[in-house]
Image 1 (cartoon, helix red, strand yellow):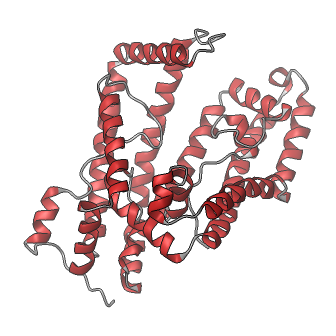
Image 2 (image 1 turned 90 degrees about the horizontal axis):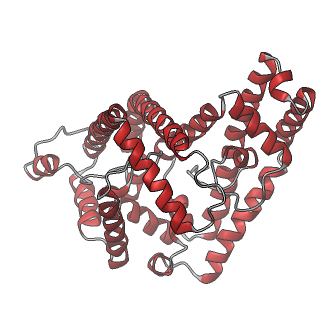
Image 3 (image 1 turned 60 degrees about the horizontal axis):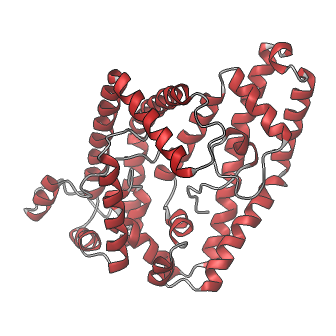
Length: 368
């Protein structure tokens, strides 16, 4: 079973505002649970737990091909590049709707929703005044459990559906795209290198690297999400009720941007913390890349470099668009925090390229 990182709506996750309500509006129970978690100061914890789970999964347990498909097939040029027919495109989006149906009808999710309803009913309309500490903790635990179960259900359901819809050649092209776009990926997943025809021994070596470096990555994600939460709290405080009643998108964007700039000017310590975290992330990514690159044979290395240096035209256009967008955003130097907020660098550290050209890198036994 392939697993992947897929951002689509989950029932209790709608109440957290973590995903887009693409299929249904939050229920009254969702609203009450969200308000109770927020009042108890536990909503940020649940949000951070979910974001951390999504990021960890996308890096360590995901080959990424399915989420790439879901994100990029909305663009006709990518559908053409990957050879995806209109019929396949329609089936993929239909599968997403069906995946939501599988989730909301899952017995485990139903059981959690029922227990949440009973818990909220026990606390009554004035849940915050009536709830015991035990009830508050149970509310938190149930919310965490639902995010985890819901995420796993959607992973498995969508993996089965998309892998049936796409051909092996299309999956291959998507994986090649991941290599070509490595400069724009937050952290490269060890599984993306399977497109280079790894041996079983090499796959085991990458798994070992992943296992060894996972705790270091987890600490980095904790730091990043903690900083994100502090930033978002300050921005919300700065906004206050300034967006209430404002319906014009352009005006809302301007108000939000001004609030972010004010927060940035007023919090130099948070800015320093952000830069320190970015440096930690960059060092980690470079270390991870180099260790994974060392596993590749010369032939695999050359193929990877060619995919990065000579991508198809539609990929070049996509990468240029991302770089232009990032350059425009950098003009204001306003921090946009989030698990996917990343300042990419070179896909391959230049010093390492030189070492490979000169044959100076740790050789590994590919036949172990």
